[in-house]
Image (tube, each protein chain N blue to C red):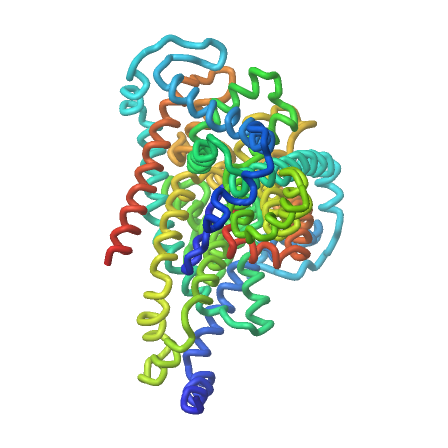
Length: 284
Length: 319
């Protein structure tokens, strides 16, 4: 063992460690740099030369007025509210629908279970882009185009989440439910009182990823929504480029405003993001 | 939304062992056959109506000349014949395929290097892991806007390059046919690195530490440890990430849409498959039948990608 330690501690001072930190630092600059630059741009005032050489990171004429200008010309709070409404439907739908379905597939025995599982498996593999035009025709035919419900509906129960929860429920030891059966509990009671508490962690992960997925979705709301009042944040922000093409400060201020909620959300719940990815997660 | 199931390198029980009581505890008490279906109703309704039904409808309209306003007539394979003569379709197919060819190798290797650099329990590594993951939770629209600002004619990148005398005139990152495509690929990598890094971190945690110790005893340096211990240990994860990232790359939409301001580049030369579907399939002029045919081709090509990857996985498992 001591030989191993000696080798390890000698490694610390070898050039390898220097290379490691240089690469980490370079990656950090590459990933964080663009965000820092946006913040800097957003804070630059009229007195700043945006195109100074060399580029200036610290504003010489700092101001918050860019944020005010963006909010005055683009109804960002309205978009945020719309996105929250859609996300609320999607999270609620997935938590209820996927949990219930996952329970039935994992712990109830019935004719047709294999078929139901197969349907969800196949549905999980269908890329949404390839059905999106038909989805739009469908939503239009039930007069839900340009509504927030129309945006939320197709993702309200995602097949992947059903299968994740099915696996989670399947890992609960049989003894737990058998005890409840002996106490005379019916399927509904066993579901709510015995099994759901056992998979709370997975339900949390599903809820968080459903939220992020819905919050960041762009293609579908872009198709469904046509009036400015109903735009979700991504569709509304897309307008920033056209509206403020001439002023990068305003685009920057808009992106900062849009980033704050998701960064706060991520910082508070980051352990779930990593746990989710490790236990079979999904990307927003 | 890209979705993915991340496997463990350890086998995970996906189904409980059949219990000794025969058919399991659950079967004895619910006497009514419809009880399980009550649990399944919301899920089956949403998945059935919004995934299965649209898929069947796509299958049907792809063989018609239907438009947004008029349900069309059956025209056989006409739409598919038209595809081959449509320069935009060829462009989109080339762009999306190039996306796969360029982005996937980067996504398989770079996050692995990154992950092996930031493993460990220390607080500082935890900080870097979080920082590297952050772009993943941002929407493609916001990331696209950030990079539009950075890559513009007078954006930071061009200003820096000119200040350092690398170039004398600004590079047309957002207007040139190829530069724009590569810029979008770069943005895709920028956004996705952290996601695949976390998948690799989980795989790295499963590699037995004693293997590294043994390699160290044999005098292996960091590079040889990486080649002889890390790489073999994450091979199945590499295949998985190859699969996930190739599907994601072929479906690319948001980054290219925002970087081209929704136009698909000058003359539509930067359209991707998804952008083409979006353009053909929406609006009052939309030719939904034709868009359905494009969708079907995309479905088959993505299915092909999955098949190739699964075949590789099986081949590797046989070894």
